[in-house]
Picture: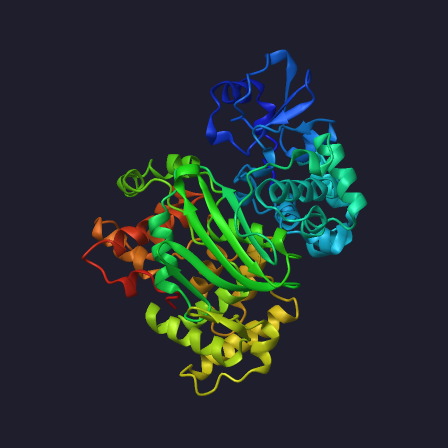
Length: 503
């Protein structure tokens, strides 16, 4: 993901950030040194260059297009992505999220333009104006960054890394790496390699901006872990995953000491590794800017003590948006435990079983096509819920509803509410977790009402919505702070505070 365009134009601010190596700006802009031809992260440990020799860019791709190569000390390819674009919901922000997810690699610029319902020329013009380069350059930079990550952290053969990163040929891989890093791929391979790689196994580290409150996020995921599909064991999140070209197992383990999350993959092949990495970042909200969020929310007396007590609270995302939406519908008007039971029955009845179970992990969650064809009768699901799930699956399978980070948020929420059994709460919850909307706000939520009542504040949806205007664009984070506080309180029941849906 790339950074916004406004920050890098403030030379004095950026230069002060570089001089102090301020981690708050990591991933939000890049500094390039004209005397060396190298671009770096703001936190680079190298000696700070003189002001007259430095230029700032909004993206790594823009620095590369200007002829600079990536620093070998600070590794720009491993920096957390910019949260600026995650806040925005416009055309450029959607395009950047889709490029980060690998759409240009799989479908080309024409596929990107089609997804955004604009011409190729228009999206190129918009991206160039905002980020400094077009979609092809952004996609190339992304492929090179993923490849560099794999070279540094694994012992995979370079040929396998080339194709796993999205390159179409070895020649393209070698030429790109030579242009962007000024050396052949084999020349900058590190000697200390992560263990357990090879034969479809892979271990990577994904960085984030501290602080990060891992406890609440893992507790949230553990409370809702779908039996047979996912689990949280000893602080490690595990699940089965299936993408277009590969399937297998995923583990995510926080490593706070180095501000990273370890990703362990065991797949039948590594063709989708680039997309998986981005989904992992989304799932654990690794590109959030906690300081910006906390600065905004702590101005409210209602939230200030919660933010101070728990800095760095993240929003649990979703590895698969369709799965999240199905589970949201199943959770309507039942407890969290009840929703888990129903979802597990759906997975067993319609999902594909693993060839070899791994502990409690036994099934892949069904695809839209499998849910359309499969029978949900006799699973304890009401007729209205079955109808809602089937219609959701049909809409997603037909491309009428898109449930990923590149979707038009407003349009998707409207289309979701047009489906039977999907109301405003459900649509907001899906937008919060599947679409990654940091401002999604389930205004009718029971937990929000309880929180306002506890603080003797008017608790009608109208008053809650008015009060929450000051939380924009972080209303989803404010909601999670209030939910977590209530869940930790003896005055509330976890089943009431954390309903997967409360229609």
